[in-house]
Image 1 (spheres, rainbow, N blue to C red):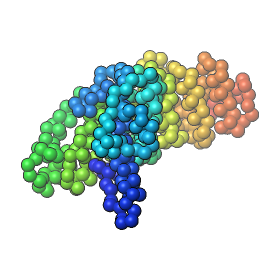
Image 2: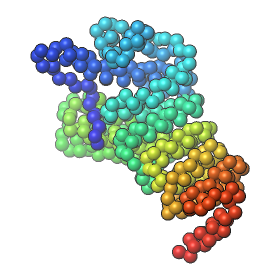
Image 3: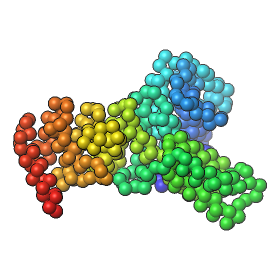
Image 4: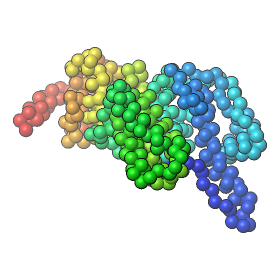
Length: 399
C-alpha cells in the first residue's frame, strides 16, 4: 500500500562520535509523532470531541478556548519537540482563549492530512475528524475544506476514481446496524487485549474474516463510518501479533477508502452550501478527471430531481453550474455524450444551459463551450447550436 502503519515512531541509536546530532534527530523523531498528536488535541478541544470517552458533540459549537502549549513553547513549534517539553520539561498544555475559534479550526483542517506523513494510523485519525467536521460543523468553509482533506486522503490511499466502484453504493443505517451487530459480537472473544491466550490458527482466520466482512459492509451514514474507523484504529494500536497487525491495517485501509468516498458523496449532496458541493465536484474531478464528469452530473441531478423534477436544473446554484461548465470544457468532443444512469450527458447539460439557464453569463459560457469543443466560430446568440443539436441527437438515435 506504500503506507506506514507503525503504532509508534521507531528510532535507532546514533553512532559514536555523533551523539549530539543523533540526540537532535531523536528529538525530532519523537516530535513528529507527538506534534501530530498535539494537533489532534487542539482540533478536539475546539470541536468538543472527548477522546477518552469517544463522545461526539451532537453539533459542533466551537469552544472559546483551545488546549495549547504556552506561547513561549509555541514560538519554537518548528522544532516539533512536544514530547520533550511535556515529558522532560513538564510543560503541559493549557486552555488558551481564542479570538476566532472557527478560524483556529480552519487553519488546522489542511494540516490534519499534511502532517499525517502517509502513516495509515495518522490518516485514519485525520479522516474521521474530517468526517466529523463535514457532518456537524456549521461553517460552510470548514465543511468544504474537510471535503478537500478527504480527497487528499484518497489520493494517498488509492489514486484514481471509478464511477462503477461498489464503494460508492451506501446502505441504510438500520441495515448496517443489523448486519454489523453479530460481527461485533463474535469479535469480542478475539479482540486484542481481551484474550488470555494467543489465538489458534483457525481463530486467527475467523477473526480476519470478521474484520473483512465489517470493512466491506456498506455504511448508512458518516457516524457509522467514523465508528468503524475508530474500531480499526483501536484494534491496530492494541494488537501485538505482527500477522494480525497486517490484517487489521489492510481492512483499516479499506474502511478509510469507503469512508472518504462516502464523505465526498455527502459533500456533493450538501443542500445548504454551494461551496461544499463545488469542493466535492473538484475532489471527484481531481480523482477521476473527465470520466468523473458524467457521474457527477448524474449525482447532482438525482439530488435535485425530487424537488424540480426530471426537467429541472442539475444544480440550483449558478456558481456550481459555472464550475461544471468549466470542467466540461476540458473534455474531448468524443466524451460529450457519455451518460451515467438517468443523468444528463455533458452535451445535454451544456445545451440546456445555453438556452434555458436564467443566468445570461452562463448562457454565453455554454455557447462558448460548444464553439470551443466543436471548433466552431463563437456566436453569442448560438444560432447554429439548435440545428447541430437536432442533427446530433438524430444521429445518436439511429445508431
